[in-house]
Amino acid sequence: MKKRHEDELDKVLHTMDAESHWNEDHRQQLKKNILNDVDKKQRSPFFKGKLNVSYLLSLGAVAVITWILFVPMLSDWWRDSDGLTSPIPTGEETETGFAPFITEEGLELILKQENVDEGEEQQFTLKIENSGPNSYEFNEVFLEKKIDWESNESENVEFSDRSIQLGELDFLDTGETTAISFSIPEEYEVGENYELMFHARMRDNEAPLDTLFFHFDLDSELITLTKSELVINNRSMSPLTYGGITFIILSLIGCFFIKSAKGRSVFMIALGLALFLGYVANQQMGDADEMIIEDMSTYPYQQPLRNVVHIEYLDNRHAIAFYEWGAGTLRSFENVTYKKGVFGWKANGGTGGQIVVDDKLGWSFSNLEHQNFSQYTDLISGVIMSPDIVEVRVTSINENVYTADIVEFNGGRFWFLVTDGDDVSFATKTGLNEDGEVVEEHHSRAN
Amino acid sequence: MSYGKKQEIETWFEEYSDPIFKYICMMTRDYQQAEDLTQETFIKAYRSMDSFERNASEKTWLFRIAHNVTIDYLRKQRPLQLFESFLSNKKDGNPLPEDVINMKESYREVYQAIGSLKNSYKEVIILRKIKGFSIEETSQILNWSETKVKVTLHRAMPILRKQLEKEGFLYEKTT
Image (cartoon, rainbow over all chains, first blue to last red):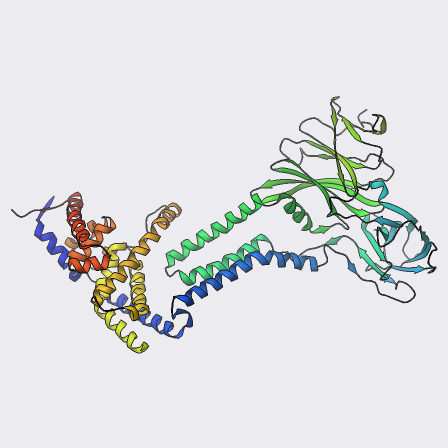
């Protein structure tokens, strides 16, 4: 150990400043920086006093809050204005009736009202000309009951009462022209409770291509077409874009106030983490119904006239969204399974099919095991077309008998059963009335 | 008026930037940060010049600003250091001041020992023993009572000696 006198320590301390040397170039550079800063502050209106810095901070905070709060709303507005959630009226008004409506595929519609006297049953002729390359099947004029999807207090309507067929044509080949004459019974108030519609399924020689739904507004004499849309870019701002722009704005503000490079990098890492964790927390704590419906509305493939009728939560992380799309006899009932992960609810898979009007107890089967849907293995569900059915029983091939859940909604009733191991793919489905009598039964295919 | 202020700050920089920088450097043990905080000290002095009542000397006043700037930085730095050490798994990538500032070996050991003391001990030793401020001036800079300055220095010096001993240097009392 080196021994020294205590006085020596005092001496070292006393002369330490004089004996240590700060790099002169660095000192001169710092002086230059300070004088530059002084010059800038003399010019800048923001650094005259504390109040102005506060003003700048407040302005920045308001800008950031405005961005964070309102940009998602703007994003929604852009998407709505894109016509994805509402049909685009494309008809024209005339004095004598509806102007020809021609689709991109060359299907031309002209609706003509044959009588205009009050008190009489309204009679119409729909002239259809197919000058396009495709043919059309399931051509049908019908009245469609208006459903208030938002209201929970509306009187429930059965699936079977949703549509009233007015006239039909089996097949319309390319180059053909035809006309469907029909009248609207007086008891149906078109425009108030019902909508006048026409649907047709377009197909080529091999397969159906799309389903077209035309809506006739008798008051304004407009024809509106709703069909499937493949939306490559739905202009909805993705969380990544939104988070990225927010990160850049906050980083710029942060870098303005934080001078050191180390401080800036730490700030940016913390900011990135905060945004990421904020997004994850938002996805974890947000309204599940809203998130699932929002996710469904951003599918690239938009089915026409789609409505989510029920979301069943099997547990905290697994849900099934049941929805219908279409109208008239071209209505389908389908489902999508959802799993909740770190980034919120994400679609997992789905099945369904067209509703068969004559089938009192519709059904379709989904193999959840193939979708890797936790312990759940089978989903069997379908619409109830008969108002007499009040109970649905499912008997599996293992002879286990289950009572399915029945869900009522404004537009009808459907049933579903989820199992966690028992195979119901070949089960017997039985619809019972109030007295326990069988109204409809679909036997197991295995039997 | 502004031109006069700028000139005055330039004069003060020429005169006091060196001891102020070295004070901050010893406090923070971060050369780059010490330069930044020195710059901040003089910018703050420029902005507060109108409120400087000149009761104390400008040197004491500038050191008081430097002390506040440094303490603010160290307070903010504490949680950040934990965060950084968690992220980078190392204490600090910057060179130590004693490696950048030209210094004799005998000073380096004392410099390092002071750097390892707690802030209040560090400050009082630097201001009283290195910078040569009086007790009254030190109490003004640190905003302490004069008694606290005396007591803290009285406690700090044996701790410094102990620290030097740990590093292999024994400073014995004169008999």
